[in-house]
Length: 153
Image 1 (cartoon, rainbow, N blue to C red):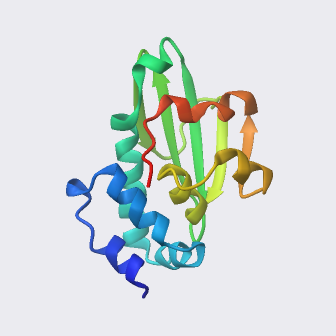
Image 2 (cartoon, rainbow, N blue to C red):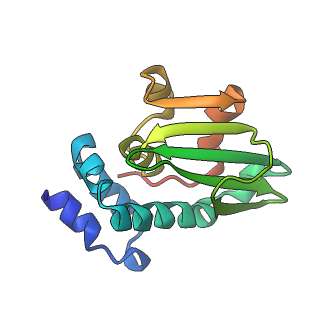
């Protein structure tokens, strides 16, 4: 395994800042991230940590009275679905698909998701290159990054 993958596999996520995580992801190629995704326990741990941090990275002052459900479909060896529910100045994250109708569904692979969540990729570029697909309110999706404090590597 590559050095970057080993670094990610050995991470104590509780002690890593979003900026440190972004630097680790920046060093990984798409191929390396997709290799990492083959390790189901590691993939699940990384996804749980990233989605777990979304609530902490949420900027309620920017969201104001916004109410929106965002469904994330992470494709790969196994599709994983998470939802971020923004309402009343909070962001709640849950694993799995609810019965609620999302305002937007974002569909992307493991590598694209990690690069997006770590601030190492432009969502607009990813959309234009068809590495990120959207269903629902595309206009809303285009401004999602303003609601989160996304690290810079």
